[in-house]
Length: 199
Image 1 (cartoon, one colour):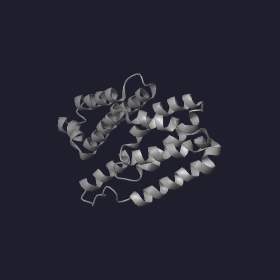
Image 2: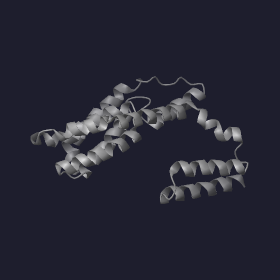
Image 3: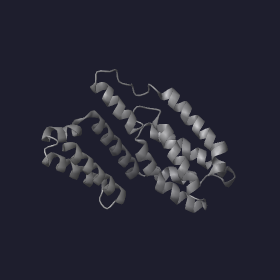
């Protein structure tokens, strides 16, 4: 019976997420309340996640992201891109990908993508360039940059937390930076040569 209820709630959650009629956090907290009210989760189990290192680290990353946005750092970067001479505009995706990739190595890559979308779209309008030619490179760069450090993606943080919780050795901050950096450089090189022709 409990399995049927959980599956039913999961389907309801997916529908609500897809329709976007309510915010994600509201739906999640609502599901948590329902699961606790039905006795599927105990109150201690319901709030256990809020004390995990994974959640605290993610929250910290979002705080840093918000501070960067409020400080106007992204606007400064956007202004720098606009000032690039027209003869060098063909290298614009490479400049943007490098900036996004390095940023997402030290912040949550999804947050970085969301942060860069508005300034880049605004920049494209001023330069009369199709935004679609820049948004795809941003998405790829944030994914590739996220592989450089343990805090670059939520996945890395989750796996690291799981390893520590189960008694395994955890990753250090820069344990896979070398291979991540090589992947990022290769990805940027591909987009600068072949990928840019496909956009």
